[in-house]
Image (cartoon, rainbow over all chains, first blue to last red; front, top):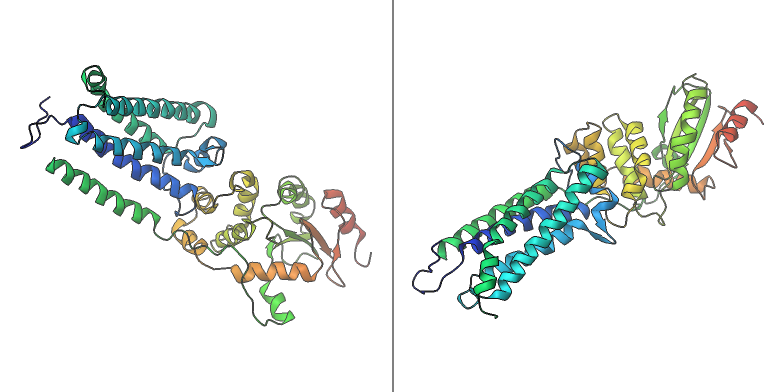
Length: 156
Length: 224
């Protein structure tokens, strides 16, 4: 992968651009579900599936916090990290690589758990949750090059 | 990098537009009683119409002052009312009339009463009434139940646009307030409160809300 920034000579990781764009999409998706949990929305147009059953289940909350808020925070963190990691002085940072990969891994594992709950416990599907699960999986795949950078990069 | 910022800016704009479109019309639902102003008793009674289930000409009226967020009312709806339906409503001996009695201590109860009346605008009052009671535990959370009420409307096949417009307004707020005020005037201080009226004289407020209480009052006939 050629990662040359115009005029600067520094290598900017394109996978982080992809992570940033996808995470921004995730921010909007998660925000919509937060709005639903807070009652700011008209009906969730669910078509197939049962958004009400999933979003009203006890699994839609972790204590007093809606799962969608956790998702929103996660996508925001990945967005900020990815954009920070595109700055020249952090492009080779192992810390950014570690946080990006670790954050995406945590997100995909949490999402897998939620998908399991939909399939095996709640027995209902929310298409927005499925979309988020697919999105975080692609984000995770896009962070795999960070493993290589963690081995080679600077400690900063 | 310039292309990247253009792409991410484009995604941001699209996301804001889509979310703003999705959120349109939400969040302005009247959820507390309204000021009825200087209303006379007869006007109050006229405004505080309950919702009738069964033959409106049936000689006996079984009246409930109920609250959608109260556990006893949900129990009444799921366990007692079906027996009442079978014994008295379906046989034409009595009609059932539901009056809203929201309470400030149950903060979603007013909005729930309005939601059910919004469903009533589309001729599905008692279907929605049953759904709200059946799912009571799901929407009795600290957060707003508007989304849940909208989803129930969708599940019942209502016109969700019209339902949402109704819920996100102050429609029926005066009627629900009048129902609660009428209940207070009749001495209701807990829910469910059941009254039985035989068509003449005063309505009898029952001491309990089990089927046996209603059965005894109905079978006793007028004047007892």
